[in-house]
Image (cartoon, rainbow, N blue to C red; front, side, top):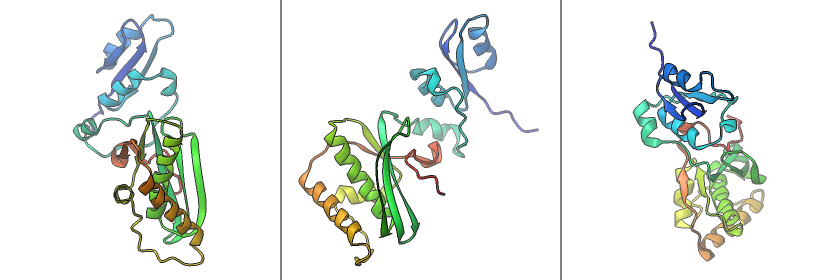
Amino acid sequence: MSKKKKKYYTVWKGHKTGVFESWDDCKAMIKDFQGAQYKSFSTFQAAKEALKGNYKDYIGKSSKFKSELSEDQLKKIGQPNYKSIAVDAAVSGNPGKMEYRGVDTKTKKQLFIQGPFEEGTNNIGEFLAIVHGLAFLKKHNSNLIMYTDSRTAISWVKKKKCNTKLERTEKNKPLFELVDRAENWLKTNTYTTVIVKWETKAWGEIPADFGRK
């Protein structure tokens, strides 16, 4: 007989609010309370983070992603900071048609999108997405952090160089013109944006993902 997975219960409105570790405790907080607001979560950290947010942002939204990480690993990683933007790229073939975009991490509202470009790679797209995101946030005087799922792109941005081995051709000339502009922007601008690696194994696909996997 399989062991039942433990759940944690967030109560936004009830006799008492908070995170409760059993259904009986949760039930006591919502019984005979008109307009009670509550929901179960698979981890304590997720329940705790939800308590800081709005009930309407969580109810009715089932998470299809189930992490294979242990409870201790998930607790160590924690939850994403939803006061942020997320960027990602998609490519059909390698090289192939490439595009990238940035979205609001919480709402997934698209903030910018570029492409498709001919003969691009995923790494180039991830690099361009980060630089575009940096310029976007600077233009809007925003102190939001930025998520990307590419360690390679993060390292390229730190070095202010798109370290691709892809050869320049007439076909991908517009793409490399954009790469040159991005590198120049990094060399001539300062920024305070914190770039953070998206923890895919803990949180699922990054919100900016094009959903084509």
